[in-house]
Length: 231
Image (cartoon, rainbow, N blue to C red; front, side):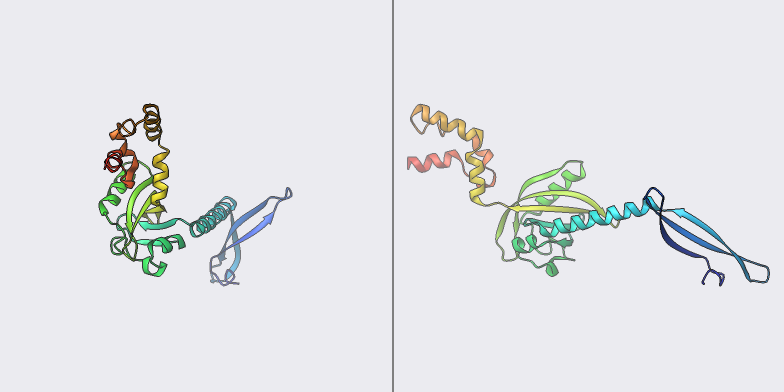
């Protein structure tokens, strides 16, 4: 009706070919207006938009899967603006670990919430990403709403949203037991403990003072343990 009144009209329609394939068309109707201003006919211009519709369907399905995975993860998952640290979205895992509700976090930055105990740690991770590197299981210390310090392992990916560079951050809280388990399974630890058994004394165990660098934030050193045994 609008086309017959002299307006250009665009609409979409679908059709199924003989082979069963569905095709999507975008049809534009252009009125042919006579000298008296009367519409004497319509021009129809169809455009095959099947590929675009399929791409849109895949994008929506991908976004749906991402959203489900984002919110279902028990880990800390957050989407932030890279430059400012402003939270765009957070999941329930974030709420449980950080102690901030979604409403409290979204629209505010991690700095305003005091989450980064050492803001320079974030700056170093951003520099690494900006230079083409990757961030996987980086050890950082974050502060919860209660003021408690959380030892976290963060992984980060850069994504673009609305023309802005953003960060997708996934964090898993580490406990002392987890880090000690990693420590005693380290090849360096196994080597020196085997040396100690062969020598029958504690001296072999604590000879490799340099191995303490592998304990990370656990801060356990062979020299500390030796001093305690000798005392």
